[in-house]
Image (cartoon, rainbow, N blue to C red):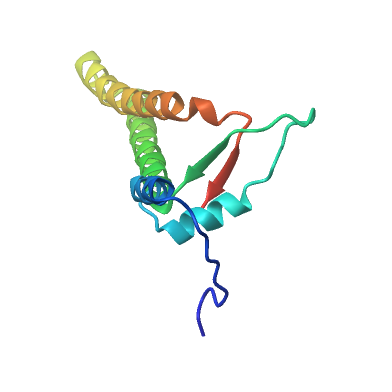
Length: 136
Protein backbone atom coordinates (compact mmCIF):
# COMPACT_ATOMS: atom_id res chain seq x y z
CA UNK A 1 0.00 0.00 0.00
CA UNK A 2 1.26 3.47 -0.89
CA UNK A 3 2.26 5.88 1.84
CA UNK A 4 0.24 8.64 0.12
CA UNK A 5 -2.52 7.02 -1.97
CA UNK A 6 -4.23 10.28 -3.06
CA UNK A 7 -2.82 12.57 -5.74
CA UNK A 8 -3.06 16.29 -6.34
CA UNK A 9 -2.52 17.82 -9.76
CA UNK A 10 -1.73 21.52 -9.97
CA UNK A 11 -1.48 23.65 -13.07
CA UNK A 12 0.97 26.54 -12.94
CA UNK A 13 3.27 28.61 -15.13
CA UNK A 14 6.69 27.16 -15.88
CA UNK A 15 8.45 29.81 -13.76
CA UNK A 16 6.37 28.86 -10.68
CA UNK A 17 7.20 25.19 -11.16
CA UNK A 18 10.89 26.04 -11.49
CA UNK A 19 10.71 28.17 -8.34
CA UNK A 20 9.05 25.26 -6.49
CA UNK A 21 11.79 22.89 -7.71
CA UNK A 22 14.54 25.27 -6.55
CA UNK A 23 12.85 25.79 -3.18
CA UNK A 24 12.36 22.07 -2.62
CA UNK A 25 15.93 21.33 -3.68
CA UNK A 26 17.34 23.99 -1.36
CA UNK A 27 15.47 22.31 1.52
CA UNK A 28 16.58 18.83 0.45
CA UNK A 29 12.99 17.74 -0.16
CA UNK A 30 10.70 16.81 -3.02
CA UNK A 31 8.06 19.13 -4.41
CA UNK A 32 5.45 16.81 -2.89
CA UNK A 33 7.09 17.17 0.54
CA UNK A 34 7.11 20.94 0.08
CA UNK A 35 3.38 20.99 -0.73
CA UNK A 36 2.57 18.75 2.25
CA UNK A 37 4.52 21.04 4.60
CA UNK A 38 2.88 24.16 3.21
CA UNK A 39 -0.57 22.60 3.62
CA UNK A 40 0.17 21.81 7.26
CA UNK A 41 1.05 25.41 8.11
CA UNK A 42 -1.64 27.18 10.15
CA UNK A 43 -3.03 30.37 8.65
CA UNK A 44 -2.36 32.43 11.77
CA UNK A 45 -1.00 31.86 15.24
CA UNK A 46 -0.97 35.38 16.63
CA UNK A 47 -3.66 36.25 19.16
CA UNK A 48 -4.51 39.38 17.18
CA UNK A 49 -5.05 37.34 14.00
CA UNK A 50 -1.96 38.69 12.29
CA UNK A 51 -0.17 36.44 9.87
CA UNK A 52 2.62 34.43 11.50
CA UNK A 53 5.97 33.51 9.97
CA UNK A 54 6.83 29.89 9.30
CA UNK A 55 10.11 28.03 9.46
CA UNK A 56 10.50 24.61 7.90
CA UNK A 57 13.10 22.41 9.57
CA UNK A 58 14.02 19.44 7.43
CA UNK A 59 15.34 16.16 8.83
CA UNK A 60 18.95 16.94 7.93
CA UNK A 61 18.87 20.26 9.80
CA UNK A 62 17.10 18.69 12.78
CA UNK A 63 19.76 15.95 12.90
CA UNK A 64 22.56 18.57 12.75
CA UNK A 65 21.02 20.48 15.65
CA UNK A 66 20.63 17.25 17.61
CA UNK A 67 24.24 16.25 16.92
CA UNK A 68 25.48 19.68 18.05
CA UNK A 69 23.48 19.49 21.27
CA UNK A 70 24.95 16.04 21.97
CA UNK A 71 28.45 17.45 21.45
CA UNK A 72 27.69 20.20 23.98
CA UNK A 73 26.55 17.61 26.48
CA UNK A 74 29.77 15.65 26.00
CA UNK A 75 31.93 18.76 26.49
CA UNK A 76 29.93 19.77 29.55
CA UNK A 77 30.32 16.30 31.11
CA UNK A 78 34.06 16.35 30.44
CA UNK A 79 34.40 19.76 32.08
CA UNK A 80 32.45 18.68 35.15
CA UNK A 81 34.57 15.51 35.36
CA UNK A 82 37.74 17.63 35.32
CA UNK A 83 36.35 19.83 38.11
CA UNK A 84 35.43 16.75 40.14
CA UNK A 85 38.98 15.41 39.74
CA UNK A 86 40.35 18.71 41.04
CA UNK A 87 38.00 18.65 44.04
CA UNK A 88 38.82 15.02 44.84
CA UNK A 89 42.58 15.45 44.84
CA UNK A 90 42.41 18.76 46.69
CA UNK A 91 40.44 17.01 49.45
CA UNK A 92 43.22 14.41 49.67
CA UNK A 93 45.89 17.14 49.63
CA UNK A 94 47.55 15.31 46.73
CA UNK A 95 47.42 18.04 44.14
CA UNK A 96 49.80 20.94 43.73
CA UNK A 97 49.02 24.32 42.18
CA UNK A 98 50.38 23.33 38.75
CA UNK A 99 48.08 20.29 38.58
CA UNK A 100 45.09 22.39 39.64
CA UNK A 101 45.81 24.99 36.96
CA UNK A 102 46.23 22.28 34.32
CA UNK A 103 42.89 20.67 35.16
CA UNK A 104 41.19 24.07 35.30
CA UNK A 105 42.46 24.76 31.76
CA UNK A 106 40.95 21.46 30.59
CA UNK A 107 37.60 22.28 32.21
CA UNK A 108 37.68 25.82 30.86
CA UNK A 109 38.32 24.68 27.28
CA UNK A 110 35.43 22.20 27.44
CA UNK A 111 33.06 24.80 28.87
CA UNK A 112 34.22 27.34 26.27
CA UNK A 113 33.34 24.85 23.51
CA UNK A 114 29.85 24.50 25.01
CA UNK A 115 29.49 28.27 25.24
CA UNK A 116 30.69 28.83 21.66
CA UNK A 117 28.30 26.20 20.30
CA UNK A 118 25.37 27.62 22.24
CA UNK A 119 26.12 31.12 20.95
CA UNK A 120 26.30 29.90 17.35
CA UNK A 121 23.01 28.04 17.62
CA UNK A 122 21.36 31.03 19.31
CA UNK A 123 22.46 33.30 16.45
CA UNK A 124 21.15 30.88 13.84
CA UNK A 125 17.80 30.23 15.53
CA UNK A 126 17.03 33.65 17.03
CA UNK A 127 14.36 34.25 14.41
CA UNK A 128 12.43 31.17 15.61
CA UNK A 129 10.89 33.09 18.50
CA UNK A 130 7.15 33.35 18.01
CA UNK A 131 7.05 31.31 14.83
CA UNK A 132 5.62 27.92 13.97
CA UNK A 133 8.12 25.19 13.23
CA UNK A 134 7.14 22.48 10.78
CA UNK A 135 9.41 19.44 11.10
CA UNK A 136 9.23 17.00 8.21
